[in-house]
Structures are given as structure tokens and as C-alpha cells.
Image (cartoon, rainbow, N blue to C red):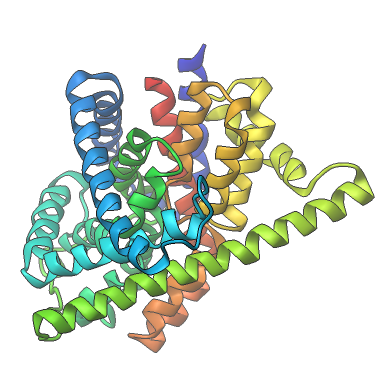
Length: 393
């Protein structure tokens, strides 16, 4: 039965993407089919094999060790701030972003990350039927972040037509930044974080290939990566430390605002209607939860968490999932966890359009115009990834 629901879910997702397509005759079905098969195989490898367990365990152990190192610096500055036995979210989940940001900076400085991003991007371009720029951008978004990635391709930004710009932005919204993966792993199981990152990479190309199909000619298939400004090693360290701290502060501020706002709205709805706002959203999103393979008894609660992610951000939704984890089966926890690992939410429209606008006024306005279509596609990517995982769990 779960396989039939999964197949139905795939058909609905592709149908919704097809309805939004701007060039239905230009859709290339062979690369899409290949990428779906790859998603299934990679999900099976990561979630259902001993080799996959070894990979996940190695990644989780690495990030746990990084979080331990980060804790040394946090303890030095904030030691004694917390009461014994307590673990403030800002200190344990957000501040480690500073240390991981520094590591990304070091790997960038010594040209290790650019080499990896270009290599994986070139390989992906052979599979997805798109250009090298689109493939590089998807990998780079998952490593350096959804706004920073546009700086690396700013030489080409002004020259891109709207259809290629859409694909770049959709990739950025469908992935997550490496700097906050450690934070995610403290809130949901690492195996679901890693699996989501891998299959979202292909999911972004699948949905973009349907919503926004086009062909990149040999003359157009150019990749010009902008090198960072020359800095000394310690200048770079200082810059990435401040960047990481800014990210932690921004995420913390957004959490304070969104969590408080949701609590207030829930209270108002409960007083007036006798039902919380999140429960109402849960009913709205319940059909999507159902086609993702979530049991009928859990679809409303799961739908509420999915909607929370869309209207706020993934951190707020992950906190809700952690609070409600006792209500869900292991299968549901896995499916919802995979759905949550992306930047597909309303605030990302502003972040991405602002990042592009900072580099090109004209292109930033173009992104703002297709912002809702961008969110629509990125949300379908999350639903697609969750459905793929439902076949495996």
C-alpha cells in the first residue's frame, strides 16, 4: 500500500510542477528519470545498508567532534552562564556555527572547496542535462550558503536570462548551508540530514527541469567562478568568524520573533475558534503529508509542522518536531525530517532576491518577480525528497 501511495505522490508532485511549467514541450524526460532512480538508490544506500551506516556515522562523528571543539570556545566565553544540567539553544546549537564557518573559510582560502565544488558540479552536469554553471551553483549553495553562492558567480550574473537565473535561485532555496548542518544534527537524526542534502541536490534539478525547462548551448555553457579578494590568512579567519557570528545572531533573532509570534497567534485562534493556528495549517497540509506516505492518524500533526516550516523557517519546525516526536512513528519522523532540511520558506525569497540585488539591481528585481514561483518549486522539491524516502523507510 505504501508503494502505491508513493507512486501517487510522485504523480501529483510531477503534475503540480507540470502545471507551472513555462515550456511543456521542452521538458527532457530521460535526465529526470535517471535522477529519480539515483535518488532512490542513494536513499537506499544511506538509510538501508551497512555501508550507508558507516558513511552516516563517519559524518555524524565528524560533526560531533567539531561541536565539541566549538564548545571549548563557547565555554571559555559563556562558561557559568547556564545553570547546571541546562543547555541553552543559542549556546549549544547556534554558536557552533561560528567555528564551522571558520573551517569553511580555511577550506576556501586554500582552494580546496572550489576544487570540490567544480568537480562535483562537472559530474552533475553530465547527469542532469543542464549547464555547468547550474550544476556548480547547486553544489556551491550546499557548501557556502544560499546568499554567498551568488558572489562566486557574479561575473556571469548580469548576462543570465530569467530561466537560467530561476534554476540558480531554485537550487539555492532547495539546499542548506554546510555551516548549519551541525545545528540540524542536534535537532534531528544525522542520517536524515545527510540523506536530504544528497537527494535534494537532484530534486532541485528534477523540479526545475519540469517547471523551467530549457537547453544550454555549447556557447552558453560557461562557468566563470569569481575568486575571493586576496586576504591574508588571519584577515580571512577574522572575516569568517564574524560572518558565522552574524548568522547565529540572525537565526537566533528570527527564532525569538517567530516562536513568540506563533505562540501569540495560536493563543488568539484557540480563544476565538477553540483550535490553534498550527492545527488549522495541519489540516491544510494534511493531503501533502498523506502523499508523502505518513499514516492517516498522523497527517494533521505532521502537516502542521510542514506548514510551520513554510511560513517561518526550518529551525522553528525542527523544534516543533522535537517537541512532538513522541506522537509520531519512526517512519513519520524520518519522512518529516527529510522534508524540513531545506531553505524553502517565505523568508528565503527576501534573502535570495536581496543577495542577487546586492550584485545586480536588474537581476534582483527579476528574482523578486518570480519569488512565489521559486518557493512553489522549492517546496515541491522537499515533498519529492520526502516521498522518495518513504519508499525506503
